[in-house]
Length: 375
Image 1: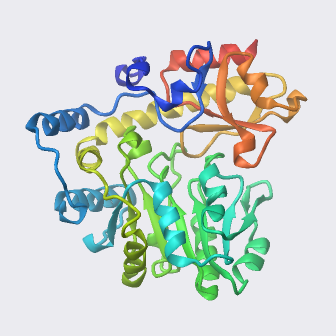
Image 2 (image 1 turned 90 degrees about the vertical axis):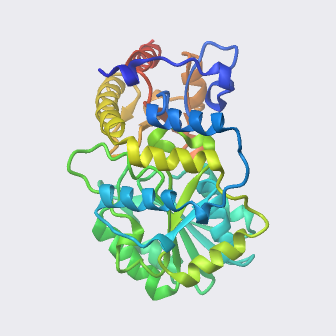
C-alpha cells in the first residue's frame, strides 16, 4: 500500500462530475475516467505558486517553451523518441482535438472510420461533422483489429480519416506494433489520416508490454495526428489541456486553421500543471502504476468469482471491461446500481451487456465496490 494512494478524498467540495451523478444516493461512482488520487505534490505546489502570484492573464501556448520541452523530455523518457518542438501542438482537451481534426480533414457526407467498442465521444464524432460513421470491430481470441473490414472501409473513395483509441478504451488493450504498422500501410496507401487518441498511453500495466505511438512509426509519420495528455496519468483532466504530435507540417497547418476562431488556447493552469507533472512527477507516476497493478489484479480476481460476471485483465488504463451477459439481465446498469455501484454503462460503448469499472481509487473503496457486487 502507499499513503499517497490510500487516502480517501472527499470529492463533494469541488463539485466532482463523477460524484454528482449519484449525489444523495448510496452508490459508489466508478464510471468516468478520472482517478480518486490527489495529484502529485509538485503539481499542487506549482498551481499554488501561480495563483499566489496573482496575475492570471493570457499565456500563448506556443510561447511556453518550457512546456514543449517538458513534453519532449517525457516522450523520450516514456518511449525513447526524440521529437522537435514544432511537432507539439497544444490543444484544449483530446475530445476537442479529434473533433477539430475531423473538421480539418473532412467534408460533410464523407466517411470516418472508428474501431469498436470505443469511448462514446469517438463513436459519435461523425455526427458532429455530418459524416458517415464506419465501424470496425475486433476479431479472434487476441481481439485484433478486423483488417478485412478495415481494408473495405479505408479503400473507399470518400474515406479521409480514422480515429483509433490506443490503448483501447474500454477494454484496455494495447495494439501491437506490427498491427499498427499494417494499419499505417493501409492508411498511407489510401490517403487516410489516422487520428490516434493515446490519452491512456502512460498507463501501461502489463510488465514488459510496450506502447507504440503513432508518430513513432515510419508508416504513420506523415499521415497521423497523435493526441496525448497528462490528464489521466496525473489526474489533472479537469484543467482541460492536452497536446497533439503532428510531424507533417501540412497537417499541422490544416489543424491550426481548423481550430482558429472555434477552439480556445490551452489554459495557463493546465499548461503549468502538465509541464510540472512531466518534469517532477515521475516518482509519483511509478508508484501509481504499482498501485494500479495491484488494484487491477485484486478486482479482476474478485469479479471472476461473482456468478454471471467475467473480466479479462486489462493491459493498460485503470478501467476494467466486464462481460455481464451471464447475469441474464436486460438492463445491466440497473443490476449494479441496485447494489450501490455506479459503473459506466456498456451500452454507451456499443456493448449493452458490458459494464466498465474505474479502479483508480483507494483499495478500501475498491473493496466496497467488490463487496456490493457480491451481494
